[in-house]
Image (cartoon, rainbow, N blue to C red; front, top):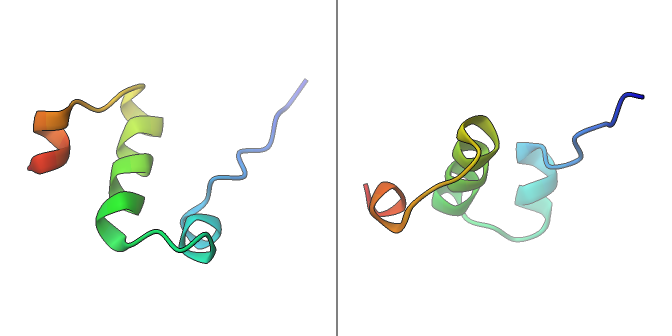
Length: 41
């Protein structure tokens, strides 16, 4: 079964997230998690 990832940058932008938040979500999707320290960078 294939699951579509709905959390695209466009979708996140439409939710009202700003660029830093979008980058954090994309990073977390890619790496499986994000720490507070990594988010602050």
